[in-house]
Length: 198
Image (cartoon, rainbow, N blue to C red; front, top):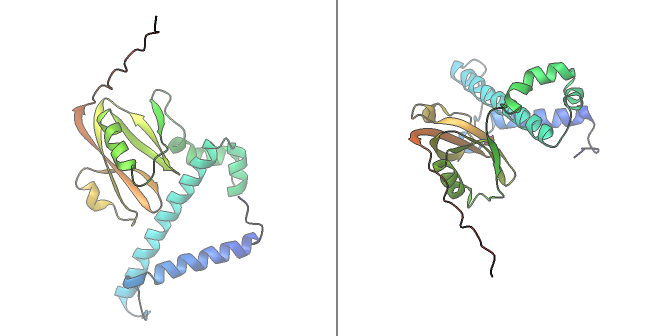
């Protein structure tokens, strides 16, 4: 999708304005009158700007994964980012390319209403999410069962990490957390073999 209506400079300015407004604004948590001399106000801005940078970095990572999944070359992605093919592959490749020995599959289509039930079933069979997109999850299989949890993407996941969760995937507005239960993965039920009538 191309934004032909807005040149790059105007688009960058509009995005910058929106991010700045989100950092300073923020609904009930709004900073009404920032006092440049108040250290607490300044630290609050630093904290919010760091959260915005983290979210932006993750969105870029997701967009690169989506572009690669759509068949775009490293050279084409690098041209958009002002990087060489080798530079963009070094920066994003290790996290976007599957490990050759790993077993991957897509789960979907699933909606927000049914995905947690489907992820629970997949988790018992040893699958956990490593990427979430529109109506689907990319899953990787291990020998152990996994628990899934969906939370609002707020930028802070430390409290979940203390409970043994790790980030499996982020897909705005959600973060999908996964936790290895350590129990052996269940075996899928055998499908009945249909025999020809006769």
